[in-house]
Amino acid sequence: MFLGTFTPKLDDKGRFFLPAKFREQLSQGLVITRQQDRCLAIWPPEVFASEVATAATGPSTVQRVRDYQRMVSAGASDELPDSQGRLTVPLPLRTYAGLAKDIVVIGAYNRLEVWDAARWAEYSAAQEEAFAAMNEEAWGAG
Image (cartoon, rainbow, N blue to C red; front, side, top):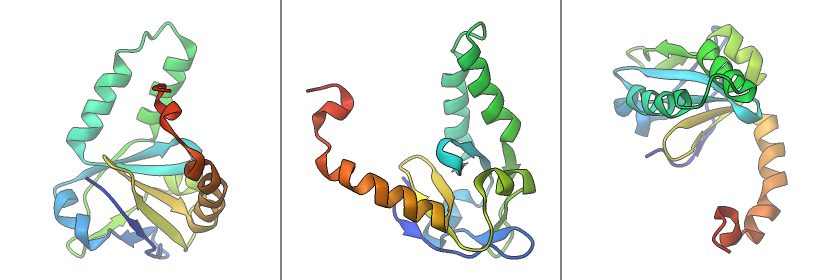
């Protein structure tokens, strides 16, 4: 499980240090891809495979399903952190998420997300009030 908020820096080669507490879990490889909200998702390969299996059950005759499948798979990249725990983010993914130097890495249960720091601050501030007021209706139980 991935939890917490971290603020590594992206270097000139597009690399950053994975949070130390997750390095072992991701040391054998990971998948990084586009996520909604103009951020990136970092998945353990087995979790990504499960997500892909779920997405693949959608009917390819439905435009929105095809669009989702294409955007996720076309942007996906198998990566291996280096011996120091650094991850190189491919340029097309850095461009998609607007990543420069200051980034935020958040735990999102089954994945990590990588955000441009300013975009995360804006998103987080906008969501805090809604989150504070959230109740069981968020999952249709109310």
